[in-house]
Amino acid sequence: MRLQGKTAIVTGGASGFGAGIVRKFVSEGAQVMIADLNTAMAEELRQEMGAHAIVATVDVSDGASVAAMTAQACDAWGHIDILVNNAGITHLPAPMETISDDEFDRVFAVNCKSVYLTARNIVPLMKARRAGNILNIASTAGVSPRPNLNWYNATKGWMNNATKGMAVELAPSGVRVNALNPVAGETPLLASFMGEDTPEMRAKFLSTIPLGRFSTPEDMGNAACYLCSDEASMITGVCMEVDGGRCI
Image (cartoon, rainbow, N blue to C red; front, top):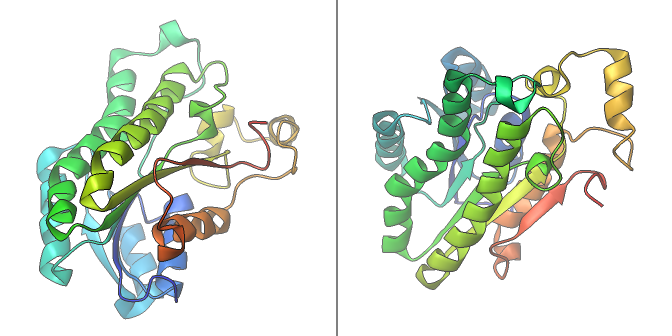
């Protein structure tokens, strides 16, 4: 029960890696807010988690929506111990110059502006208590970029850099900030990353991962639990690869 008594917000928590993190956190004793735009899916997971979880409907790219999510968490628990910035989207694989303005703006709003918005709302609360953990879910795309996902790659590189900057600034306030860089996994975004989900495309993708498999929600939950637990009390500013050796 490494997170016993802790409270945690997981954005994009209703599916994929986010749901894996929610399940692990609850199993380790945390009270978790499943914060997602898909309320129905979030509610389904909440029912599975029982009294240890609550649901917030949130658009992480919208300031008023993030503020309402934060207020809901504070009303429910009185404080926020852990924030996991997991919500993210991508554009479909395509040459960089062909991505539309709307696609570019949406990817940066969800993947980058969201981290600014959650920080604006939640960092002051953590500073006031001189305690807190922020975990940003980036990607191996931000460490070792692939062709035709250029602007998605850039958002994840941004997130890794933001993580280190946040860690340095917030350390004196007792707040730790880390990131996870997963390789693609069995999530709703997999087909978007590959362009199409076929056995041939999966085999091609897997050939670049030395351990020979995708990241799983359980892999992400385990790594997130460690970094957000007191076992990692001396770790901040780390961007941990959970990628089966993809970035070696």
